[in-house]
Length: 393
Ligand code: NDP
Image 1 (cartoon, rainbow, N blue to C red):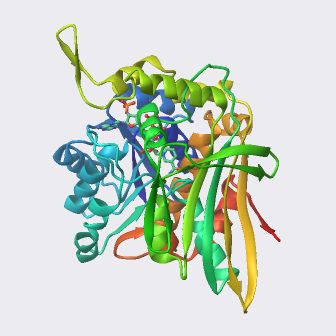
Image 2: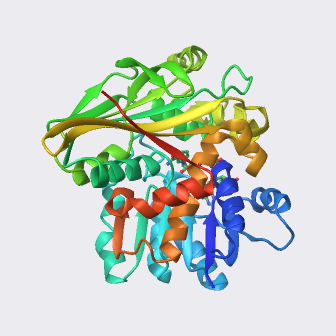
């Protein structure tokens, strides 16, 4: 018997919930809780009667959440609310002795900067309680970390460089919309870029570095260097690493709209006064933009996310590409969500499954690449995210 509590009934929460129901031999009881009960009920109606229970909770409030965890007797918490809630949810898990999993690292609402520092600081507390907190079990972070661990385990004595390559050709027919939470997405994309080389972080202007990459099954796409959170843990855990970078594709229309919104101040995260009321421009923009969950039925195209690792094996130079291709329409047909939510929600369910089955078990706060990648890679193939490996010249 394992009772999982999923927090956050958004795009990713929908996929996690559907996938947990599909794996009901592992997740014998499932509760979906969110700030608005109505968001949970919409997902509940998509599933067979009695498949899940729903609850209302404000995850910013540690005590309220701890009470819910205790009341329902949850044995694992999957946090797919927003990164702002990571710390309060981790604290509620500590208070109730419950293992924890998330897909995005903590970000303070008033500062567009995400880092693991405050979550890693809870390592001792989780360790002392004998609990695992698994950080970043989405696609990137998540599967990309597992791909790096797999490359390290099976293909290299030392990895010298890693490029993480994230491509999405999804077309939803709107002039401008984001594939996941608009606030989180736009804060990430409009921030300065950063990569790591020879032990140092090097900062770039937003979109300053661009390269053309030929994505299998998709074709050549302009890919822009961004800072992305998995690099912070990978530089600690991959042996011999000299450089790591992250690239993401963007269409011309997306970039033009984003630049324009930024120029007029609509990406601001500080309060401004409007007709005697205080508003945060980015939050108001979120209200105007299409809800990412509503894009599912309209989105066509593919995602291709992977890593290229270069290094040494038995004294010889080696370069490999591990990647996964998903089709937005197939994702929607299976779980009523587009590919970005799907590729995040499936790994969140897999991480939780491995924790419940004790295939991944540690005490403390851990990142994905710190575990044996083989079991996770097998589950990806079984649960809807088959991957490929290519040796490159
Ligand atoms: P959405 O905005 O669609 O969903 C977030 C949900 O969280 C909403 O349904 C909202 O609830 C709920 N929520 C917000 N605040 C609270 C709160 N205080 N208490 C309880 N529930 C709350 O976002 P996504 O589903 O797109 O993203 C979910 C997470 O996944 C984010 O952290 C995002 O950064 C991460 N992500 C990770 C990726 C990866 O590859 N690692 C990729 C994409 C996303 P309600 O509807 O009830 O108001």
